[in-house]
Image 1: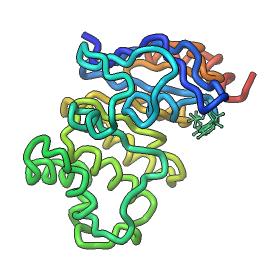
Image 2: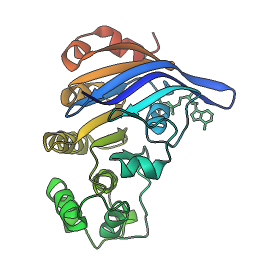
Image 3: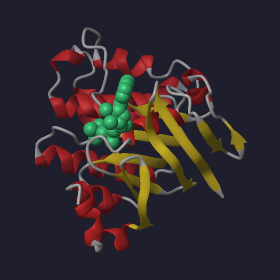
Image 4: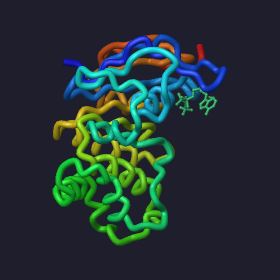
Length: 234
Ligand code: ATP
């Protein structure tokens, strides 16, 4: 069954219409990638799923119920965690405090969720008492993902988790995503890094200028030259 089913989505910023009639779905247990060039509208779609933006038209159905235009806190309560682009951690708070703040909806037990995050990202346990603003870029990204996991989500929405990281850290982040999915969390990720995204994903969609241009299994998309071309604006 589809955990998330998005139908006929149209989104605008004021008069600027950026998402056009977008359909896609994510099944329970899958990792699905949304690919596309800068400005294609990937972030806008994630923000619409988790209630940060309301669509002009269309429906966002989660666990069989419409959640279109839901308040972001309610989306978290229902099991959707959004890890935004740019991380948005609390720089002056400790690593542990940042993680605790991610548990504000009281889904699951705080100590168990914290333990699970530390298992996935041992580095965060080592640095639990450190001010988050002094973490390296890769560690901050781990913290942002870890904070999302503290609400014990069924669906994790990741926006450009690997952006700006050194290659070795990119590998760490994608390995962590794989582990999170192996442990039962469904993942929908937005990426510009086509190759890594298709390595961890089961399926993908390619967005071009606000419309879905292509979709298929990760294997099909990895072998389709139109995927790369859509990034180059061809
Ligand atoms: P990137 O990979 O660069 O983050 P993206 O695919 O995530 O790009 P979006 O951030 O969703 O793209 O942006 C889609 C379009 O909407 C872009 O043309 C962008 O300029 C526009 N846009 C985004 N936010 C706003 C806003 N607050 N007001 C007006 N236009 C916006």
